[in-house]
Length: 63
Image 1 (cartoon, helix red, strand yellow):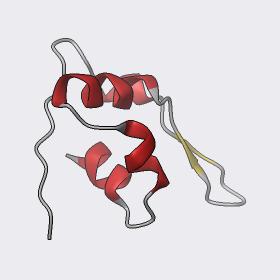
Image 2 (cartoon, helix red, strand yellow):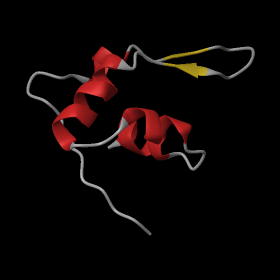
Image 3 (cartoon, rainbow, N blue to C red):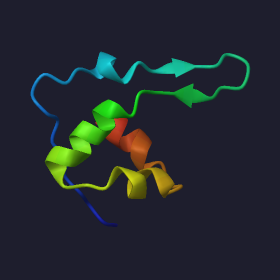
Image 4 (tube, helix red, strand yellow):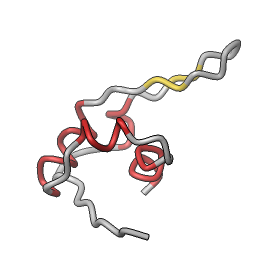
């Protein structure tokens, strides 16, 4: 398993994600700007992470 380390930029708060869930469909929506900021300081590619289907974005949010 490949392991990556991510760094959260100073001042970034969990609330900045603005997470919401549709109660009917269960779809989770969030603001991608905070994730882009994390990727920028961590040297990660957000587009590559989002295109994966293994839950890596959820892991990044949960971390």
